[in-house]
Image 1 (spheres, one colour):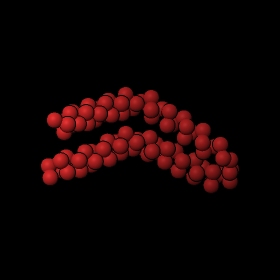
Image 2 (cartoon, helix red, strand yellow):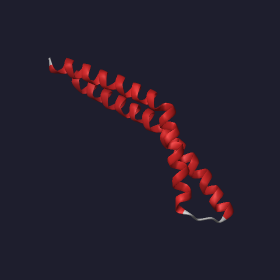
Image 3 (cartoon, one colour):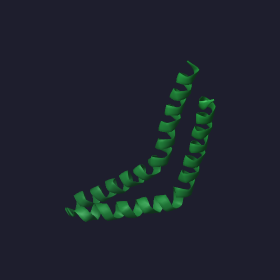
Image 4 (tube, helix red, strand yellow):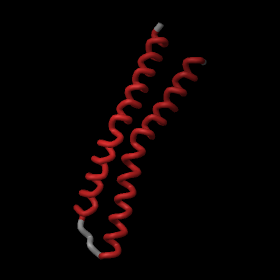
Amino acid sequence: MQEDAQLLSLADQTLWVTALIAGPVLVAALVIGLVVGIIQAATSVNEQTLTFVPKLAVVAVVFVLLGGTMMALLGEFLEEIFAQIATLAV
């Protein structure tokens, strides 16, 4: 029963870490897509690459600014997972 609780806790923590890592990138892409969509609707310019290039640039900037923090969070999570695997194996 205790192992089930540990696995559920690990699954919950996995989803939370995934949201923390993917969240800033997805929110930035969403905001830029919305802004570009509004501009396209206002100017009647329907160019496909117009939405792709700003999103790509903003996602790259977010990765540059927050990539270290994301990797640190992922590294801490992996250390905790390996520690839990070691305790379950014994």
